[in-house]
Image (cartoon, rainbow, N blue to C red; front, side, top):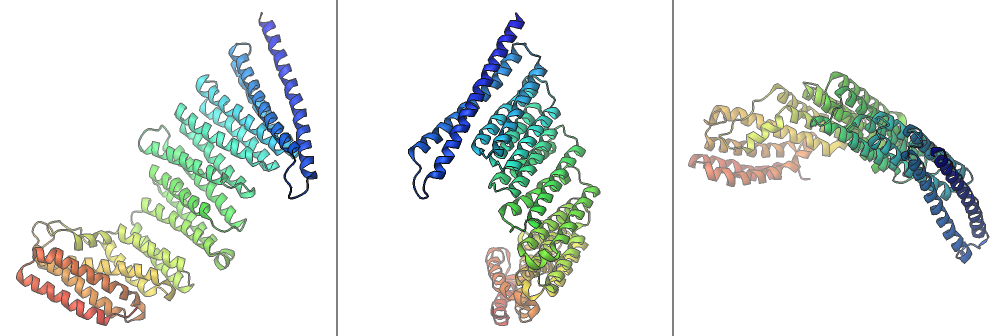
Length: 550
């Protein structure tokens, strides 16, 4: 009985093969006829009705053939479910069946029949990825790792054909199919590592393919899919919902970082293309999600070394002759990558990161002034801001000028004093072309110096900030510091080194007036109000006269 059933199924398969062969011949004739009619039509004239009908016929034939391909896949499935073939053999035949249509697509592409090749490729994708999903989830014939390998094999073959025959449609169909299948399998099997690795490799392949072929949008799909899977894996690990081991997660994250940055760097340097939105966005996301994610999983000095090395390489590329002298955007791209690597690594691992950032702030400012590189001046200001935040200098200013008297202030740290001194050094070192960024250094200097001075005066005259401090005296001290600072900024603005101080005078006077109304009149005593009004009035008279006109 089983032999009769097998013979009947073999006859059906033979009949199906003959039908597909007839359709292949008819479709080739229609495509050649349509192409010849288009070539014979004069330029500027509409296509003849016969050509339109031929195109419709080609489209319907292609659709019909695709349905027959899917029908063949379901026939193999029916044979397997009927226990005529073992499940493993049915899976192997189905997998080979899907790959055979990729081969057919390659042959069609070699004959310049790109439409036909596209339909073959889509049919192969429609057969292979659902087949692997069912074999893994429903029948449990494959482990998650084996399933990821199977998806990688099919996708790699399709990508190779897409590259070889310039068939972008195959990349879209199989790239999208592989990404969707990997995410679905990761959810169904709760095995994140193999499918995250798969999407990273497929995504990098899509970006590389889009770099060499005109395929707008393909790189966005590949890159954002890899970004999402890396974020998915990292987030699952951090909330304790993933069984991924730390070492495995870090390995995948570093592979993602290295692979994508290598492709982006080659894309920028090798092709000489302008830095666009994709390069800027994906470059930052690669470092933040890949390297930053690895530091979130398990910070270590090994990861710090990786980041410092990658940052040094990025700066070295930025200062190479073609980039430094010819491409300003490229210089910005590479130096920003270097900054992110060093900043993220040292912030997470290095205990005294603020001290290092002070040194880098001075170096960046000096290089920017000496070589007239505004980008490096910007980086010096960013490192200075990071140091001010890490050392507590910015927070001390918030407490000194903004919180009630009964709230205790943080102590002045040595690192904070070092940052304050660094801000003064960067103001002096900044070149004439770095006016906006020198203003940042000047703001840090004014904010930090005012906070330190007020902290010392408040402790001696109003009592240590906290429950025992006198709010009336503290209000007068705050007004005095703000007023005197405004006058000093006016005097400083007359010198070229501090000319940006002129733009801070009026904002500081406005802040002083608002504070007088909001705090001094509310909490001050008669003598204190007299002093606050005297300081504020004197500043309003002197500072505008002393400041340098803009």
